[in-house]
Amino acid sequence: MNHQPRLADGTASPGTAQPRTAQPGTALLTDQYELTMVQASLRSGAAGHRSVFEVFARHLPHGRRYGVVAGVGRLLDAIERFRFGPADLEFLDSAGIVDEPTLAFLESYRFSGSIWGYSEGDCYFPGSPILVVEGTFAEAVLLETVILSILNHDCAVASAASRMVTAAGGRPLIEMGSRRTHERAAVASARAAYITGFSSTSNLMARYRYGVPSAGTSAHAFTLVHENERHAFATQVEALGKQTTLLVDTYDVPRAVRTAVEVAGAELGAVRIDSGDLPVLARQVRTLLDELGATKTRIVLTGDLDEYSIAALGAAPVDGYGVGTSLVTGSGAPTAALVYKLVARSTEFSGELEPVAKRSVGKPGRGGRKWAVRHRDEQGVAHSERVSLSPPDPGPLDRELLVPLVRAGEIVGREGIEAARARHRAALAELPPYALQLSRGYPAIPTVFDPNGSEP
Image (cartoon, rainbow, N blue to C red; front, side, top):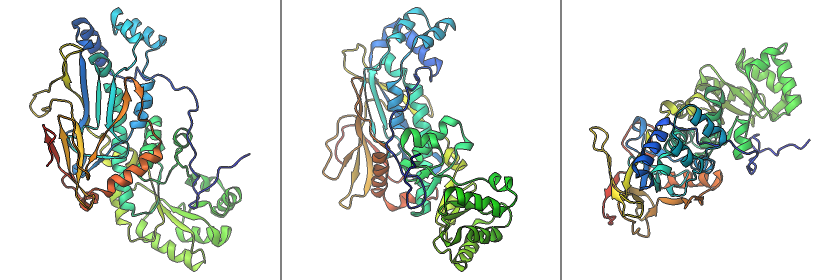
């Protein structure tokens, strides 16, 4: 049997993710009102009107200072598979959800428009047009639900994960929230966390589908099923080698640490502490490991951690963290509050686009197709996000934010997660230093709406 190579920290090394099996269609991952609008617009003739939709957030959750774009790769996969197959059409017909003309339209549905978006791993702010979808009204409106369900989830997780990585100060983080969320959300969460700097995940499907490095220790059940702690440790070391990580808080932590070193020797890879007063225990365990000669044995902390508790552990002698519940729930913000709004349409498919926007109290819109540029100073530090109604003329220090993702129905913006991971590091590096503070505050840079796209 071939074994995967291991990284220095004991995690499995990343592989190149390849398509494994044919994925099911995504067309029914939608709200019925999308089909209601298609049927009605086919009747009125508006279905073929050229239209532009945009995805943006009116605000950042919980007073955070930036958001992170994630899920773009998953979204492109979903759009590529957005087809109504025979079984889907039979269901819609038998349930009386749509009429015959709409069934005929859905049977031949293929998104033939174009999509631009912020690159995965980049940062966004209130009003950032992170996705721009152009096509006929009918084909573009059908994508609303799948676009928002993917981006709202993945951006929320990535935004929380990025703060955790900052709080960890260079110490590695393991994503381990699979048992705290929906099974499909767990895979997406692991992917989003890796993009923002987590070192590995416990989720094997994320490794299988996306090449995210995987890692795993053991649960308290493993210790409890054996006659005693020594027997459990000896069995794990025999099976997995001395570089394994032993869980030492099932009974008495100091006694378990001594037993672990007696069993594995000074070459023991790591110990994990999952409960108790973590800062105090970490210091006690570090002192004890050093006294026992296990000076290179790492200490990993887990147990309902979030960015705030991780930051509070900054002075503790800790070598890594495992984060679960807080990560997969967006650390209190399980959605990024993204919306999908029509901002322009033509009266005829070949006509010129006209800005449109809702005017309701509390949720006003801003009509017109947008472009965005991040303005930076001579030191490369971002100082504003300029959103305009005409293509920008960026200066030498500015960065255009919207890139082609789909062109005339063809996917053109697909890339690997390593590129997104590198991009996130670069995007954070260009933000002003106070953007990384965990305290509540204003967005790190202002979003300035400039109708003419002029320089500031």
